[in-house]
Amino acid sequence: MQIDPLYTLSGAVVGFVVGLTGVGGGSLMTPALVLLFGVHPATAVGTDLLFAAITKTAGATVHGCKRNIDWRIVGRLAAGSAPGSAITLFLMDRYGVHTAQMSRTIGVVLGVALVLTALSILLRKQLLALKLRPRPATEATRTVVTIAFGAVLGVVVSISSVGAGAMGLTVLLLLYPSAPIVRIVGADVAHAVPLTFIAGIGHWMIGSVDVSMLASLLIGSVPGVVIGAQLAPGVDERAIRIVLSVMLGIVGMRLIVA
Image 1 (cartoon, rainbow, N blue to C red):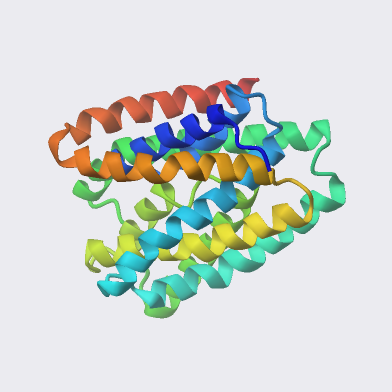
Image 2 (cartoon, rainbow, N blue to C red):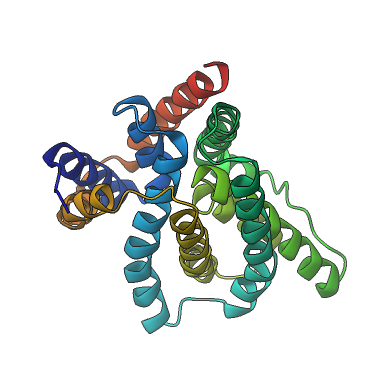
């Protein structure tokens, strides 16, 4: 296994931004690997999924110890995302994960996911303030909608590695407006762990994970997250999120039209 210092540096930068803003690493790492390093989209997605699974485990553990996780929501999401991810990976393997057509498909889905992520980061507070919230009439309906959304996440995350963070959190806040926000955040983080592990292991089984790249990224990300988290209280989070939203939107459009 060979450690690449450029990947380590990238992991440190992405980890720093994640620690500073809380924005999901997949939204930053996957497009960086594809556009800056020329990594095949499938390999970038597969490697980033295991990268996310390992890093998110720590966050989920902290939330779990503080009892900040609504396990009911996690279970509903997983009921949809697990089969959604498995079916998606089966189809990707069947039709050729390293083909030109699959590469283009991953690029487009990744681009759309980045644009939606940018919008969810930028407009989340406005959506919640305007109370544009779907309110299922019964708990049974709410359960079905959550499972269906989990299935959508399973598909999107398995193809692009993006969506389990900002997009997932925004939709959950809309679906469960009366639940404490900290428990919604905890549920979103906790659900991302099994989803990214399932999708990441699936990508590894079909040959789209670079283990050396994964190790290089992890070496840089850990200190990056710690430093970013330490500096977070002293920065203008709103300004950084606006800049990130614009950047993600531009990168997303670049991938869509490429």
